[in-house]
Image 1 (cartoon, rainbow, N blue to C red):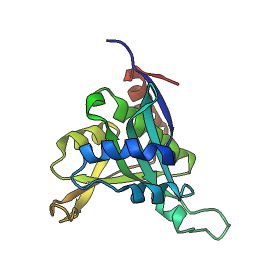
Image 2 (cartoon, helix red, strand yellow):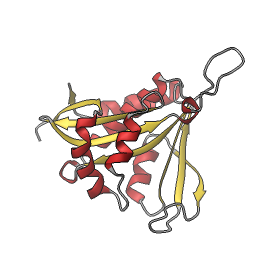
Image 3 (cartoon, rainbow, N blue to C red):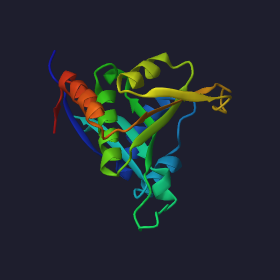
Image 4 (cartoon, one colour):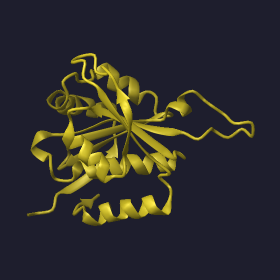
Length: 186
């Protein structure tokens, strides 16, 4: 199989049209253009990335940093330990199961580390066993359950997290995942 030449870059307003198409095919209750525009207007506390093949957006991912948004400072003037919270990862149907989601998740984890996060969390639908398995591969553990979390279906959400993302053990886990991925990233 020919390797895919993948480009990962920060999401821009001009990417939203393509992102929305993927969003609509991926989620029961997709985000609107307005939600993505709002997220991109707060890059001090959020990061969104797109994956492209031959210039076409084929996936995207986002992470927010709630404590940074709240400007929580310690007595010594440094920002309190931030938590990264993954908001979404989605891949165009024709590019799924090609490790592009893994590349994007690695990018989000790297971004969280660069912003000083020690903990990364997320929610996913209880019945989404594919996503559950995916996140477990990256060391995410189940923290709890949010009953009736999804207002569209009343479905419960599984809350997952990974902590100490800068530890040597976690970095070793990520390196093993990187070694398995066969992409040429621009």
